[in-house]
Length: 182
Length: 160
View (tube, rainbow over the protein chains, first blue to last red):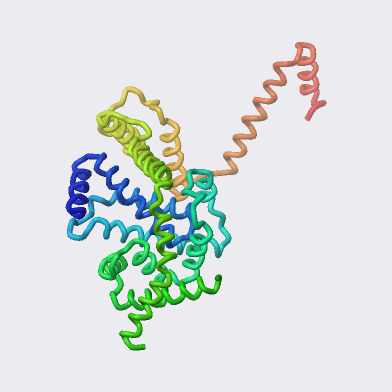
């Protein structure tokens, strides 16, 4: 049902209905943000990636071929953008380039900061940053986004076997690291 | 590690982590974040709207006319129409560039040795011309008495 609804919205948008695109943004911005946040452990970076992905969606939606699920297609873009962002950030850190854009958006709206289990959530995010990107990605998609291996394979282009191996290592490391802290 | 062992280890680890994963998922699904996501969506959609607005709008026919005018002006400067077309206004907008073209043509002729320059003759003429002008000017400034005195001195060979 969701699959059909998405395709209807895409078709409406391609026929010039901007409200259809707004509905898609309302539906997917949260998922895009949380994927980026899980990967980046930083609200401001996740905010930036989410904005970028929505702009890409707007520009590239006409290339969507209606053969796969829209959310798989959106996740693929989000995953690529997030990984590119991580690479870019590493390069910037290497050359000690300060990110003006980052400073600019600092003052803007933030995600809820006064929440229950704040310390535990922070710890989970810190631990996630300590494991390799590939393992982190499969862990985030499987546990926080509740995607199955087949869907993750479609998004990342990696084999199910490879994903399972990465997930297993991710689980082991995360458990160890969380217990270490305790 | 056997496959069964691995699966049971995964299940065990997942069970151990389940409580923390649930905490994180509750944080993600919290309604308190609704305001942020609404503002984020509005911000991006506004950005997209702004990008769609052109900086200034121009009627396409004016645009074509402008391009035609510019290309005509440019081609007029670089193509010699003089053999076929007579223009009433020969001092057209960019007359300096046609002068420049003439100089260029002259210099290339000199370099190709089509024109021989006699520098000695040229300099002598220049000196004669300048000094004669200078003397003429000076003589015109003299009073009649002074002029007569100079004339007498020349006649008596007191000068030169």
